[in-house]
Length: 189
Length: 189
Image (tube, rainbow over the protein chains, first blue to last red):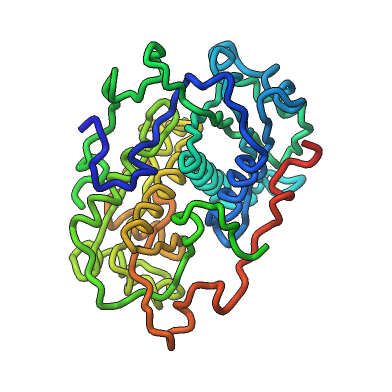
């Protein structure tokens, strides 16, 4: 199966991770607020909310500071997105190497998933990536040692230009691969 | 703010984590398939899909094996849910202590988030929890050492019985707490 089943909710079924974004679409502050609101209401272990975000809209000062630290591979496409979000995890207890929560990374993943689906609902596709200089970005934004930058998310509008083959939904040009549903079950269960 | 903003997508806005479930509602195999399909299409680092699931419907043999290992706190409510899912993470490379992926736990969190939202779309509320004997459950299902059980999710229908105060949406009886949206931004950004 290389396309999602039709009974999957449209937000989940239509989601994919583009690397081509409309270079002219300007996100509004309300887009940013709604993305943060989605993260805010995500569940977390003991309601620990172990997340923080650096949010930039293309062209603003924060955006410039982030783009400087992208790797060559992401620099080709990520700056064109309308919004870049740096996803930061409250990973350790301050001044120790104890985990803040056994689930901090897991919970950040959930919060980012909620953001990407809120984005999808607003017409903003999302791609998460790790192609950036984490140490430099950590220094740039003075991230405290007990917090850790995990990933970045690019949000933007996928161009409708049919010549932009890379921007077409993957079903239109290349199969998407996933393990079969039976392989998602632990063997013998 | 103790309720989500109205511009949040209904699936995200309506989601909460009950601990009271309708003890008579029987989930169909199609519910199980759709939950797995939601996980299956979740994004993951390099499409690594570092997840596996043990899925039980109330009353089946797998359900009985899972319930045996619940902690006292979750045994009061989790067995009443229609579906229990054990969320398993491909955490290490086989026969090593190397991480399989830097993002395996994060990606499992995303896949579970996608499952919970698919559940929500089907009328099945979800609560994730960790109140179980992980070692015993690991032995019960012969989980390989490079995989790790992280959490469990209970899916079910919230009873509409107004006497079931615990089952009412939390906005009706107790405020839900989240950090203010400004506190989600990394300071100074």
